[in-house]
Length: 484
Image (cartoon, rainbow, N blue to C red; front, side, top):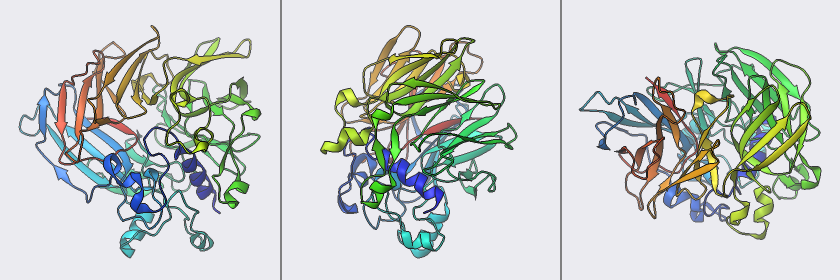
């Protein structure tokens, strides 16, 4: 089996039991899959819409485009289906508040991956779902056993927009038309998986990223300079292969979590999940010098982390903020529950490393039930005061003040569902929370989705503006803001 396929299969199997949504484990057969129904149900076709209805007033500084990636299967699945199987579809809302006739317009487009194009030629679904074994006949022919769905996240760097999916290479998109410009924008310079969560250093303009694998090298660190040239491709020595969905950076370090979420190819051969949860192995946080040098590792309590918020350093300490669960979700759900109990759900968590004494302290920053953390992106690798998280049941958001240690909740009306909130700063505004949050919101039923514009400082239940889209938007993952 190919390196890329191993990486994909293992990462996705773990996420199947993340616990961020009801009905986490799909039933056998695509017809009964909860991820083809309700909030998750796919929509047909690529559409555009101008002169969208806007309730309230769009902020004057909101000039640019909000984009969000997520799964939307082009063809009816041929077998079991899970949320993470769907083809990547990017939804974009372009804003120009100065245009009174057309202040907001919408467009959605598929990421035209090789797998999607192959299926379009066949007129049907060809790939297995991630709840199934890979297509070994395809692998034997040198083809992908799973499809690179390009459905997880987006990144803007060196004037390029990429759609990301950590089991394989990125795809480059045109930021206006959303057309797929090409696959593998690194032209083969990087081998293996490419994280869905690279970090852009605001001081240097570098993109720091990584890939992980079930075979050596288990972890690789990469850096692109601000012009998009690969300047670092370095193996990180780990004692075993572990699932790593996210990481963080400081000016000097790449910060990795080496948790006991292990691969088990023997389990895969027996038809079981490929991840094991072995807390007796302990957990570590690694500080990997970005400029080269020996890593430093620090013992930490075993836990499961899918998303980080940020990290920063002083001459004495390194601080990491992440969303942590006490156990890997597959272990939590082993009894057949569709969601972890409340105490086992993700919560915002602080790790602090004392570089002088080589000691680490850690602890929770809020109650359980927070995921997909976002912040003001210019604060990447710098001390951060405010974090914005999505409730794990999609029922609203939380604003965390990391200085005052307080949390403010913004809950949606009953039956409504929200997505990750992306922060858009006011140009020149000094306050870290001086800006607006953009989030897709779905009212009950099959009606059209809305994009809410929320004052990030006030964090009021009433958004400053609501933009009604032409139709419903399926539940998705991560988004970004591209300023005009």
